[in-house]
Length: 333
Image (cartoon, rainbow, N blue to C red; front, side, top):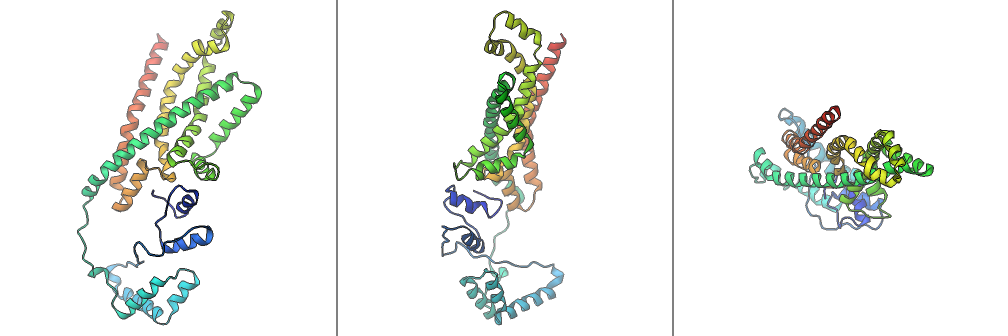
């Protein structure tokens, strides 16, 4: 799992979502002081160094900085600073000794390999992009199915329900529409973790589905109320129950009116699914972030991501336009 911060990985360890976290020793030590019950492996996986990069014209400044750091190592000032801020460990004492002895290996002394070309990295990441696109599409389809099912129930309850039920539905719809979907995803995944530990994909599905259900319910309610009242009165005169009227007369006509905006909402959900990357779901946007970080540029990853989103959303937009055009023609005739 890839995270965008260094806080939630340790929270997921505590909640049992992941088995271990691979991060800097300093971050691990600070987290252990904040969260009880964690254990840091004593042997490091790798040793890294922070370096300063200066322009080629600043070689004199570079040499003065290096000498200032060596002087602080010799007289113990640098170690005292590190200890003051609790970022010192035993590995650094050996590093200091090697630097002062002149035996620390320089980066220019390490044989390297030729960097991989941009197009080579693109070809290597392309299968991951396609897999992430499938995850995005599956997540959007399942979330939209949930949104439609819950939205229909909310709309029917809003139209036919008792006063208390209508009030509860209005409260739900207004709260969901009045708060950011990103906040709702965080609450479902992290806020409810002490009650139920949902997998990231399930939390994303619930978050998107329940959010869009509020919007879908308003579409369906408007479509139900758009059916001419004369037809409803005629059905009542003929002895139809409310259930039969909804199923045989009102529902089919409302579905015809709601199908085009419902398709537009699915296109919007397809794009909003990018927000679930904060829950470690490896969908298209998350994969784009990883590729862009490793490549050092957003141009090619961003263009590839946009192309895949367009490939998924444009057919749906075209379908919505065709449905609207067909129904306008049918109404006019």
